[in-house]
Structure formats: structure tokens, C-alpha cells
Image (cartoon, rainbow, N blue to C red; front, side, top):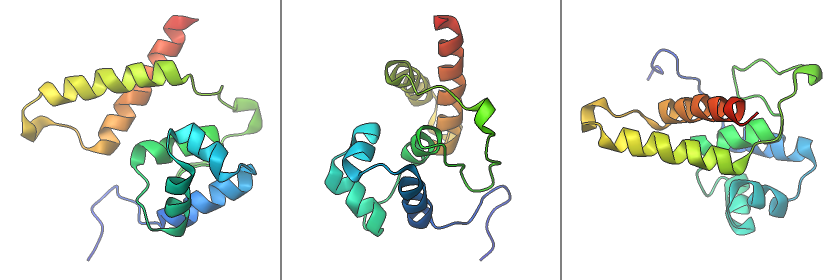
Length: 128
């Protein structure tokens, strides 16, 4: 079966393992970053637990690991560390707005993430 247009087919477990290994972080550090337990991170790395799109995006940004299809950023264009408080505020706002929409108009999780980081970037700029 062919993937829908715009969808990228890749192994999430392999990507997550490579990103974590390249960062040099331990499972406990990654667990803290993702607000998960170390056991959950271990299950994710073994392919026994799914990695959500939200967690993939966090790993990508925090561990400087480009998502499949994404061009790696040059070190000079490195992003600042994620402000968890602002990120959670953006996430809460986007999810709340999405939940108010009729079911057929709701965003999927990738559209939600895109919106969350758009709102997050705006909040970061406003904070400065």
C-alpha cells in the first residue's frame, strides 16, 4: 500500500535510538526531558512502546536530531533550549481550541504539534 502524499515512512524506534545515542544522554535524562519514566524510555527504545509525535518533536529539538526529511540545522543557527512552561502553555491552548471544534474539523496530532510550536515561537518572542 502506498503512503499518502506528504507522509514519510521511517522507523521511529531506530530514529529515536540514534538521536539518543548521538546526544550521549542516559535514559533517565531523556525521561526527564519527555516527562516520562525511565522504563517508558527503555520500552520506546526497544520498540515496545509508541513514541508520540509530540515526544518526537521534543527529542528532535532538544537533542538537535533532525526529523526524517528535515535538513539538519547548522550549529550557528542552533535553537535555544525549550522553555517547558511556555511549551506547555502553548500545548494547552492549542488542544483546548482544537477540542472546541466539531469532530470533522479537528486537527490530527501532527497538525496540533505544528500549531503548538507556532504558538510557542510566538510566546517566546513575546517573552523577550
